[in-house]
Length: 149
Image 1 (cartoon, rainbow, N blue to C red):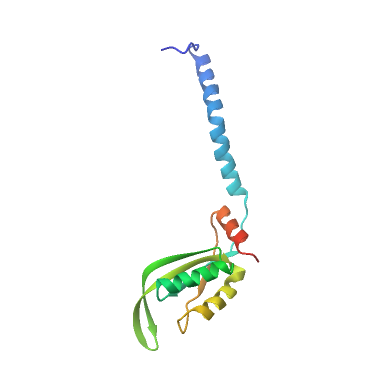
Image 2: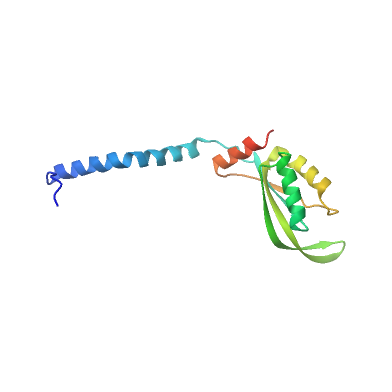
């Protein structure tokens, strides 16, 4: 079946223009998305990922809910069934625990640690944090929007 297009170089030009017109919307969307992600700036260390171990899932859920409700973090992931091996009071211990992965502003880590210490059943609760160096700009913006200064 012939489309009635001229042959040779004219046909190539017509097909190139036609394909360009059809691809323009897709290229525009991809370009805008790439520009949006590249144009958002992030200052390294503005946000932190904090980690807290818990003795069981119920303690983990209670702490996670309290942390998010108090706007001490935007999100808390609960990772079940980790095994912790550690020294405690001169003895090597091995326990099954649950890990909280907490995403927050770095400026909230101190308040987060205070909340965990006040509500955690362990004598010495683990609260450690690491600054976030890089990440998906819209996600990091969401943390900022969710957790006030």
